[in-house]
Length: 160
Image 1: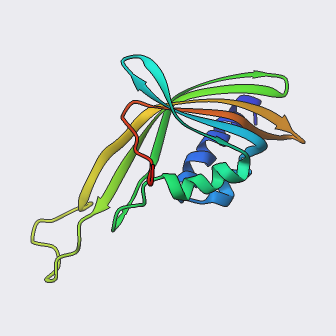
Image 2 (image 1 turned 90 degrees about the vertical axis):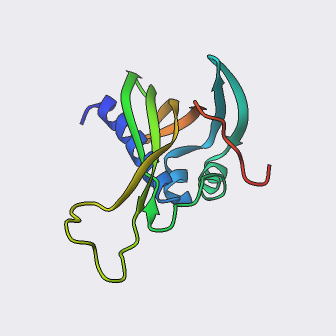
């Protein structure tokens, strides 16, 4: 597999681990001293709203800073338009993201009504923005060293 494809797969693993709220799986994708910068894009200007340092801290933030999944639901990330540049053992990756709340309708007590077919529920976008990451190959494995998350919507942190 090409280096560029391996770098893209780090992002794919990151969003899946975040979707599962798995602090262990998220932390495994970052270098020990990695940094995450969280920003808000307001009128084309990026404003810092948070920062994290260290793979374990970043992993633990997934459970504490991300919205819990809705009842009967999931919050999958979708990424697109990845731009990857690899130079030896260093790489950069930029991509757009959208996060959705996917909530299933409760099954009616008397079963679904006549004519009901297919998926029952609602899919609603709840977050959008951009990822910009720097990665380093360490012992043959790509690790995120710097991860910049720029939100296009205001972001509230619990307890802040």
